[in-house]
Image (tube, rainbow, N blue to C red; front, top):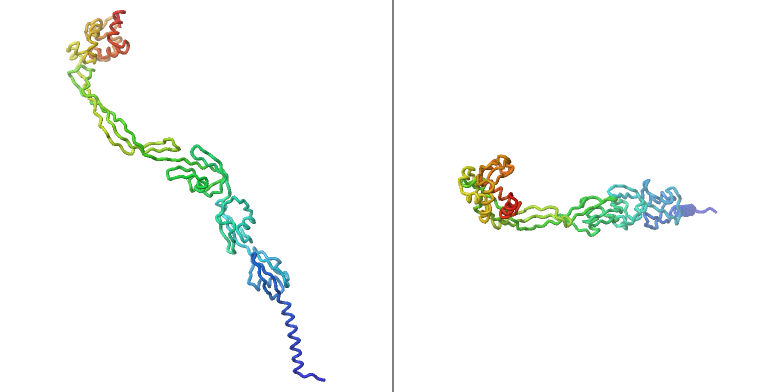
Amino acid sequence: MKKPVIALIAGSVAVGSIGFGSLASAMDKAITLTVDGQSQQVHVWGSTVEDALAANDLELSHRDEISPAAGSPISDGSVVDVKFARPLTVIIDGELQTFWTTATTVAEALAEIGLHDTDARLSVARSTPLGREGLTLSAVTPKDVTLAVGDDSITVRTSAADVQSLLNENDVAVDSDDRVDPGVHEAVTEGMTVTVNKVEVVEESEEERIGFPTITNEDDSLARGSERVSVEGTEGTRNVVYEVVYVDGEEESRTVLREDVITDPVAREVTVGTASAAASAGGSRTDWMAAAGIAPADYSAVEILIERESSWNPNAINPSSGACGLVQSLPCSKLGPNWNDPVVALKWADSYVKGRYGSWQAALAHSYANGWY
């Protein structure tokens, strides 16, 4: 018996539907897709890993990692692991280097590139996530540094980037006056020595003496070589303010900031004789002794000794020895060119007698005992 045409068509449709459903079921895969450690269940219409990537809009470069390979077949329950590479730029002790890594945290990336030292100082936390856009960080590796502060010196291991950080790390406080070598902004390098000199700048005041000047007046009524003090000089005083620089407790320098006079000095006034030998000789013996500065108490001893030497003749010359003047100086040159000026001779004799015998009286005693002095 013949089937109706409608029945045949219906049967054909039924068979075709069953075949398409089987094909669709075969092409649709339920897989686990892991991207940078994050997993999700996805359905993929395809048969290879590459189909799974395309279905999820994942484009890979030659630096990225995928497991299994892109051409590998997939089935229900397959696991596809994708790790994207990202740039990590590290400035290590001032030197810039760029690495590509599939790590997703800074710590993992540093371990991957070989920067294992846990004492290295980083500009970001090690736990910082590393996104696909990458990251730039700085790293300072530990170094042995000598830190000298004043008389104390120690060697420290530090990850400080610069000298200021090193000082902060070691509780060394410095101010604008202190001297730090090398400077606080210098980078710390292996084996370097950082020297700190503590500087203190203070003001100090001192009371000081002011020397007095001497005013000299000439008098032609006094014998040449004689002098008379009319006003004794007096020192003045002043307050001087200094800026004093101390380095590590030792004074380095001082600079005068200002001076204030407390008392003015009083000048010493001296009158000196300019009379010639002839003019001087016109005076009396007492005048000559007074002009020579001989004390009146010594006049009697001087009278006797000079009488014995030259009979008080300023021009006396011993023809045999060459001794000359009132005091018969030998050689005559001891008295200078004005040897026949009685005041000059007596001044020299006063100095000689007191220097050798202590007094005119002692010189006279020596003359009595020995016939000379």
